[in-house]
Picture 1 (cartoon, rainbow, N blue to C red):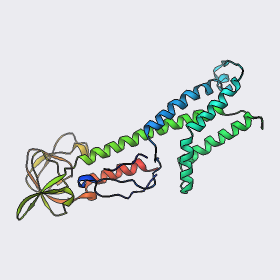
Picture 2 (picture 1 turned 135 degrees about the vertical axis):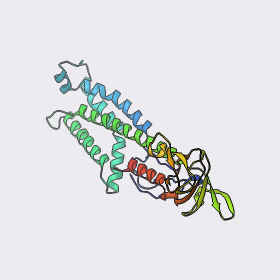
Picture 3 (picture 1 turned 180 degrees about the horizontal axis):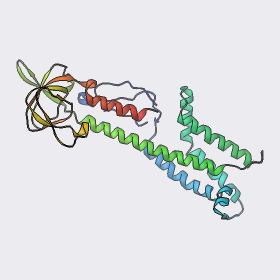
Picture 4 (picture 1 turned 180 degrees about the vertical axis):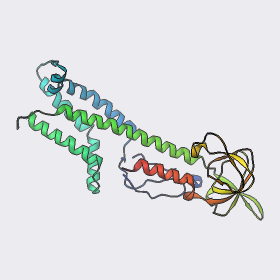
Length: 278
């Protein structure tokens, strides 16, 4: 199964990955392109370390909590210097994301964040240089960047976990199936199954495709697909789902869905679409 770790979207899906298994493919525009949980984690912790002094020396925070930060030569430049470092180090990822969004004429979250931190950065430096009389918003700037990094770190962790779930789902399908024909039984790759084929599923084996039981009965473990903790009793005429595990009985199943037409593939598409959607 192919994955991209990355922040926008197009789906040129190949219905089958390695060994003929369904494999969602995100080769197009991806808003998380080049992003990873580790990158956001590292940026968050360093930005947080730089933000703490900025907040501590902020006049507004001192007034709220009733304390006075130490003053020494150059202390007035602690906030602008450290907040600028946070903006350039932590905020750069948002600025790059905004540039991609605007270039593709798809403004979104990155554009909004970049607009906020850029306005705060420019305004604060204008105030710091004495061009206008107002209060600089260094601590707000640094805090916003740090909080956004935390949010995107959490988001990327969720996306990575979803990708891991997709990989585990893809592993549920067997590589081969036993097809029953007039000439007997033959073992073939799952990717060669067609609707209407009759397949044999022995005890303990995974169901290779969606289908209907034509002969036999057994208990099937569907927990990995439906979440049902107990095996489900199946008999002739009942539908079965690809990747579920057969119990002690032997089943002959008529294939009704293969490749992208299986319920498993539908679940994988939903997860893939959810992790890359806005």
